Length: 394
Image 1 (spheres, one colour):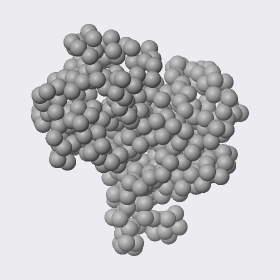
Image 2 (cartoon, helix red, strand yellow):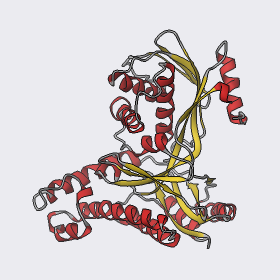
Image 3 (cartoon, rainbow, N blue to C red):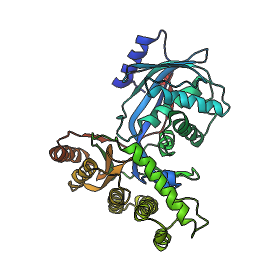
Image 4 (cartoon, rainbow, N blue to C red):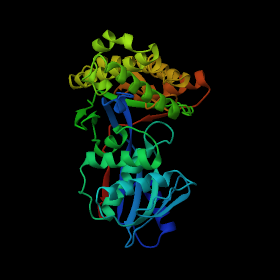
């Protein structure tokens, strides 16, 4: 592998702050979710894709138990002992790294220190999972420094990173982001069963490509709304269990069953549950359509997903709706939807291969005119999951 410009910049950063040479480069990608939103914490199905935007940790092991990392984009340091539970109150990003170390140690792994430079080009605050990419890249660095890179399976590593974000950072996320960052594969989406963590890779055929539009709009409501939606789903399950005692989550409810017992639920909780139940069905249908080469059907399912997120789950926004409209306005767009928690961040479009640049230019023109905001538009192939490169391979 020949170092690209960005990797050279990370090497320059390492040489600025450390003497000697690094030994490894850990890389973990961000993700976009093709379909399956707000299903992961309901034990459902998701279909994410790893992006060619990532977080990288250029590092070398230390002989002691100290972690020293400099983040280029934040211009700040993480400096702590492995096993320390004292959170960084000045910067948030070191807590993701520290929390991962704590969870790996909880699994019985004997860790040691490492030092290096962190750099990411996953847009922060966009809903493309820069935090999960940081967690997984850090986990790979921890395992490599301790000479235990094969100690955990991919699902075990993803679970540890999720637990770190839940319990140490304090963000009640699902498992999807860490899972796809760990186990993504070039040219494929990943169908994940968020209850069992069973997964299989689903090819993205050459005839279609992904275009991602960043609204550049604030996601300030996403955190509070996320917790509220989770609580509403849990309330729905508790009420439905009086008629369907065998269910444990909305994953276990069919659309027909939900409709039959809708009188048990308030109107709002019914609509929340209807989104989750129908979204799970759309994920399964989208996988069948992809594998059958029915791209028009995949696009229709993505459009239906956005309508459900907008109307039943109520996590869209004017910016996201206008972004989706701008995507769909081009004839090569087969379907588009918001991706991520909602309220801001990104939307994803499925487009005919060869038209990506035209679609990007159309999005930029129409969204900017409608919202008076210049969007960022990314064209990314389905990419590889996390890996560690010995520097002899670069």
